[in-house]
Amino acid sequence: MAEESREESLSSPGGRAARFAGAVFGALWYAVDRRHRKTAEENIRLALGVNGKAARQIARANFRHLARVFAEFFTLARINAQNIDRFIEPHGVDHIRRSLEKKRGVLILTSHFGNWEWMAYAAPFFLPTRLHIVARPIRPEALNRWVTAMRERSGNRVITKQHALIHALKALKRNEIVGFLMDHNAGKKTGVWAPFFGGYVLTHKTLAHIALKTGAPVHPVFNRRIPDGRYRIDVGPEIPSPLSGSAEERADAMTAAFNQIIENEIRQTPEQWYWIHRRFRRFRYEKPHP
Image (cartoon, rainbow, N blue to C red; front, side):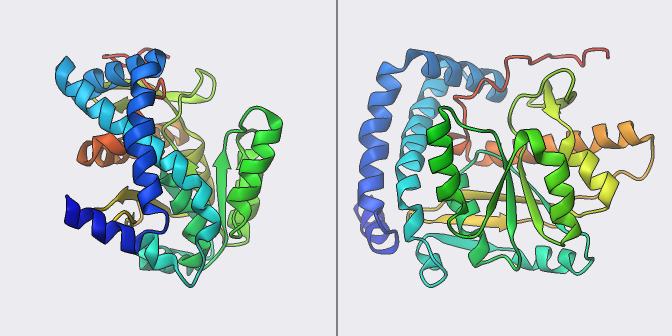
């Protein structure tokens, strides 16, 4: 552990402070925030099928991880093209380079996993074209303006959820990249019941519809913290599109594939996902009828 800490302090700017925030504030947050603690533990038991003790262990680690991620947000401005290797370690970028040769743009499937803020912010320093990020507005409005300005400082552009379709289509037409975080709840009008952790949850189908409408390749891109304090980013090959069925059936099948990819990532390092979100509040063990 001491050796790991020494390695991290050398390679990760602000690593010591971020570790402190994760260890101390994460533990304090877990102790005092009963609502989010209960949500996380219930989600973990339901999704992973573990007992109460194991769920509490994962939840504590998750609160420490998230506290650290929030602390690391304030270091975004330190990341630049010259020092990027001190923060992240990208792999598989050639998958996106080859897809951009098709001139249809690229869609990215990701989730609130690892440090999604560092991953997105650093994207202009290792991707060949601009990244547009579909995000929900934060309240209050003043905070949303500040966070958006921080997220766009490296060259990205934030697309609000309400205008995702039109702006995503324009970006793809310019052969640019659009990223979707696909692990939020969807409403009955905007979502489809898709498999997730042994049941079904309402899942946004916008990404699948855009992919099928435009022919833009979809690539899974996820990151996770590695022992030296940096985050390893893995870009996967293009996700195949369904070849048969109606437009809606194909969109449903593609959305189900997206959920399976996200689930596989979470199972590998469960403490690094956003368990405090009520992702399973509409969870059903059997698929509801339309």
